[in-house]
Image 1: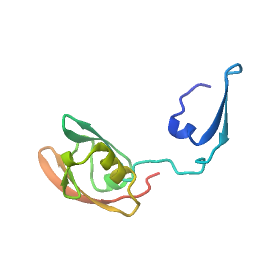
Image 2: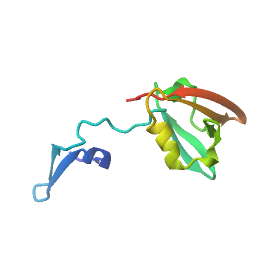
Image 3: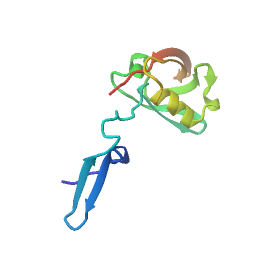
Image 4: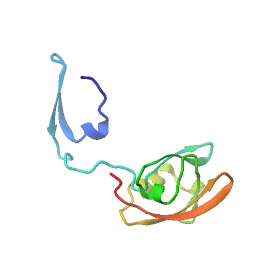
Length: 124
């Protein structure tokens, strides 16, 4: 069997590579029981040409409940213009923010601006 295992999985284990036999041995490490980091907003977004564009909305997430769709353009978060947020700050808030945190988002869809509130939650 072949496949890829990302570093977010491998870092949970002590890994032993047996190259001669083509085998990888995994033993639970210190982070084995920790929950996988995943967006608590349910938004996947990217910064392109100075704007932040939604490229994915997780089914059953706070973002889906708030009505977000792919290609929506984020304009402000908690009243702060999007160009004043670094990508790391947005990740810390929207991906890593505490469950129950209410976030106010202003976005544009088809030249119409909308403002919604969503409550961060563990999506997976």
